[in-house]
Length: 571
Image 1 (spheres, rainbow, N blue to C red):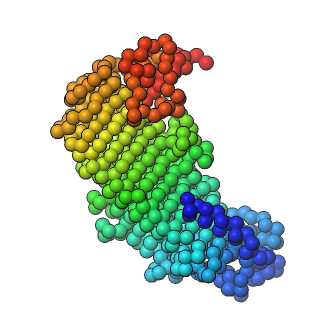
Image 2 (cartoon, rainbow, N blue to C red):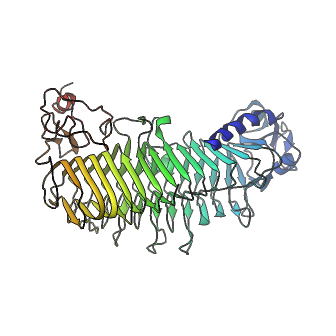
Image 3 (spheres, rainbow, N blue to C red):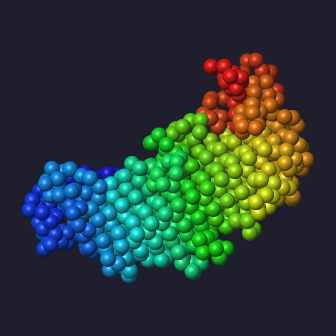
């Protein structure tokens, strides 16, 4: 929170530092002509605002240590004087150094980059980032605003596109793209050490790569967040990669195709502030195919490290283990609603069509070794893996899945995947509460649990293939108020039924239950129960139903009369 307040304060302070604009181009109306004056010359002359035409591509490497506004996209200097923009001005780093290097001085500084394209920069030595390299040494604060700009085709050791280093460094992307950059070590798009990053207003980190032959590097194809870096993502799409929004199409040779987070870093997907999914889609870990690469969308490691997904689309990512997300070593994953808010109450989060490798891959959607996971209000479908099609956990992981639909994962050993178990839980703690697990096509059993503890309650587990609900070894847990297709493998099975839940339309994947389902008004409330069903409907006591063991419905859906009316075609 402190970093956010600092971020806002720096923005306000910057307004007073800008002087009369000067124009730079190659026509008679320009204050300075590009033939004999560089952007660096004007920076050195303490110009407060520089307006650069796009009449020519500028080849330059710029160093900044004070507040300044640099704007491009003007057809000519007359337009620049009038503030009329059309596109971007290109600055080419010529593969010599970062296109823009920023360091702090004796005071807070704010650098605003507007309507520029920064390309062909190279980051070496202390200037690590290829496009923009920012290093704070005096801890006085550096704020960068990247507005309507593109950082593309740059190469750096750490941060192919952008390198941020320092506790009081912040970067805000507004209508900007970090596109097709490459890191030799970590952070293909952005490398953030301790600082603060915000993506908003249709910005994206797209098609970047972190590639290294060593298993110690090649981390974070899109974004590397380390040592307490804070990241807020407020831009996304449910559409194509080529909408250039969110975190999409990035790759890493090692962990974290889209995002790698460690050292207490926190990444937040904040859909409740926009009217759209925030996407982490089509990212790939293990791009060198050496069998080391977890977390296609995101890899989290270490105590205090956290990914908070409030309205996320985690789709079509792939990795060796954890096709979607890999959560390890006391790191935390939260998927749900933010204080009850989401961009869409009925369709808040989706974890869809992620894939672990066909060569012994664990955890199609999620993989965890000693991580902490809490998932709610989420649709989980069409994920694939050899073992743990939805989730694989071991070594003291703590897993909660609540108020969620888990359906149509696996394909019965087709297409090269073994599809063994839907949930594969080992030596870990597992809670399933108000979940509908339906028509997952896996081999062995829906649940594989050995060691640790488990609580299965108020849920529907109806997976005709394999037909066996659970395979338990060396563990006894709670199994209460379940509706299942088979009690095979369950140990307790109290207040539970073997019955068809009376889904509305299995063929079209509508797993709402009808008003007179066996699941209706079946279950008591428990300490794990949430106040709403997976679509944001409040829990209620249907007066037309006799309460069996309680007034709550089993499964993710709290059936309302309207569910049946609309399913019958009435308006």
